[in-house]
Image (cartoon, rainbow, N blue to C red):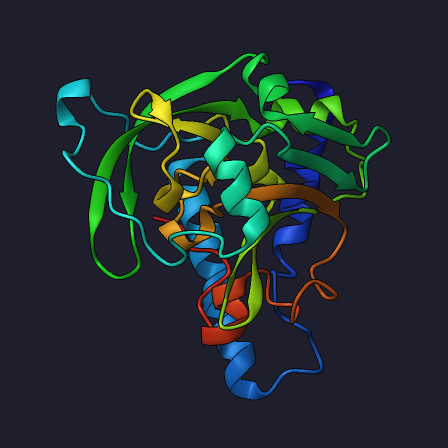
Length: 249
């Protein structure tokens, strides 16, 4: 791992105590208790399993016959349908925020970078699971290429899809951002991502539940705080349904 990655792992530890959505002195008692429990869950899992522990990987024979879509199954815009029909020639992934070298990458450019392939299990908060083979670019490679700044504590994933009139987004801290299995995936089971599974790009955050794996990815943003992102809770479902920001499994 590059030196900046090691710095952010250490910085991430310092940021963990604050949590993603706690606001000390501003919260109701119940919210404070909930946030404390979430922080304990996150820190306990990492202490027991190790910050760089790999999620289980499987054999090709274990791959599920079908891999269902969930949440948004498409992006309901004319621009997306036009891009989908042509293979996304104009789709761009940006890397912005607290970086010294902002990036804007085409799918072709992403596919030309060193890739990681992993067969992992997707666990949905609704109770279903599926095993699939994912191919993509390690997020750490993109962050290092963009020269992410030391003051960045979180990475926000910007998406093209909307639910309930809100644009989907998610976030992780720098520890999960630099985890070796955190990738920007463009293939599922050796084929380009299907529309229902987030084409053309989605995140794989293999040690967390499925709602953290943002689909229809358009942007990656490095930030110091999540307070001014969405409602300050760190993600779409965290905002609308009070899901926990850290969804470790």
